[in-house]
Image 1: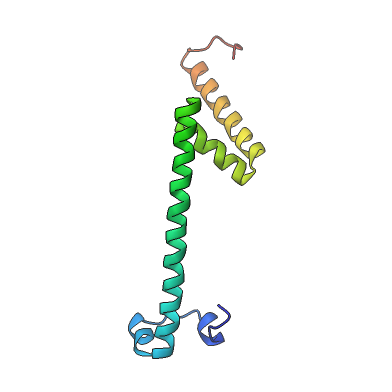
Image 2: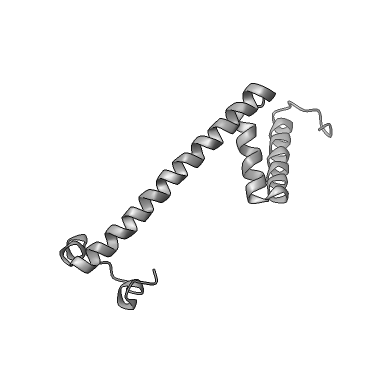
Length: 110
């Protein structure tokens, strides 16, 4: 956004698209942003196809469930092991309590 005039970049009021399109300089700037954003979307699509291929290979070669693959990738990407473990523990505690309440678990046996 280095090329955007300060009055546009910091403005809290939105401009109407018709106003932007009516001004050649602003229209050209918008067009360049749109062109770059479309390139990004194309690259994202390519990367998503690669991820899909890896997920399918993990299924075909290892028999790994796609959902487990996705979770593992997200966990490594986000580096949020502790938070995930804490959430799982909280859910396990909830399930245990519900099962106790419904007499599906003997008291104290988890």
